[in-house]
Image (tube, rainbow over all chains, first blue to last red; front, side):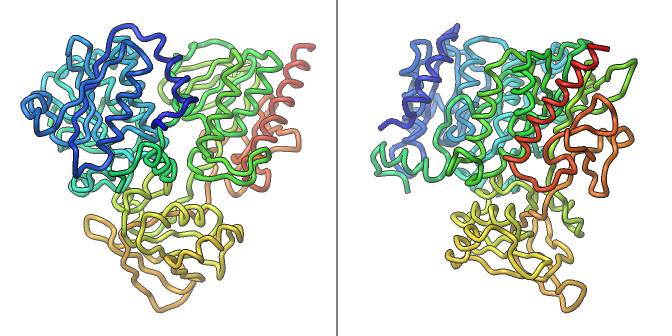
Length: 216
Length: 344
């Protein structure tokens, strides 16, 4: 029995019918000592079965260290959502994107495929003006209904500016990070380790924090 | 723990933990742009059970209608399991919310999510509705179904430690407290549900209430008591929440008396009831002492053309099934009002 049941597969297949450009999911995993690595890999592979526009590349985290380094992947399980030409849009998932975050993975695939974030023209302009690298970490749990809003917005922001990288981080799989950033409520967003906030904020407010992080 | 299991077993494991990948109907759809300055026949503010049911009834009357809400599902999204909505012996809050949404989306009405209404004001025989992000639409009739949100404890330390151990969303934040000692404030149904969410995660759970006993449904209480993980502190009030950077204790005392007792905990889940989301209509609509919008048995407010339904109203008993019924009634009343208005 696969991770995705027939009903979900049918739904996703329908949704993937409208994909435009190809999307490559790069999965970093290892055999042992990684909770959910196997599931994360299965999830990516099962998704790829549902559209010929989606491909999967599985790498051993240690074996492919130079690739991991070049994509700045520092923990596993990890999924990087790339264009089929290998273009990096700064979209990362650390920990399994299951539960409510499954939707964020689908949205990320659709985003890279369509090449359009749907953010307001004003937001786009503000994001594109940012000239320093910004690392956005969105801490989530898989049972949090508001978290996908924050994750998907962060990914859209990353998509608009190549200096910005946005990670979904599943808090319970990375307790040391949850600890370090004092994650006791989700979604919690940390920008460049300097600016942080909790909650799924509207586009305009999120972007204000982004500007603050870029200035700091 | 999951390694070494077959895929079938793994999926079962994910299902057991409530984190199996969910179908698409669970996720917020693309945010629609608001048709600025458009005049709708009916605008429904709020997308919980009342607002969504009102939308179905309004759509079936073929009204030109807009549903505007922060999310679709409202408090239902934050309820882990529901065992008293007719037709379902057992359904999760997210599943029920998704079913509501699916039913609404089969109709060609405008739905805008991720938006909050800032004000409603009567203007030349119609209503002008402004959103927090600066958009404006007009409506001939309005249904307010904005529901309720968690009531704060108003104890010292609560605000300071919000997100540092204090939580109002047990279903979201429970996984962040593995093997920790936590407190749940409130022994009603929402408190008991939070305890159930925490049973499989936390090491020990302290339940605090100012009343002398549980007010939760006995079926929940039995489940909690059988766990052996829960200690109750009844007839106690919270004096303050203590901590350094993070919560490290709650201080309790017998209601109105001494002595204080300090209980070391790392998490405090506040579940002491709800307050209505009615601030934005204060001064326009009549509110009762609890801040709820006063409605008559046809869901009419004191302003002709504005109706209200669900938890935000003075109607007693906050239940999904009641909110849904009230939403239906409000839509039918609004329809009758619109017909009558046209006839004039």
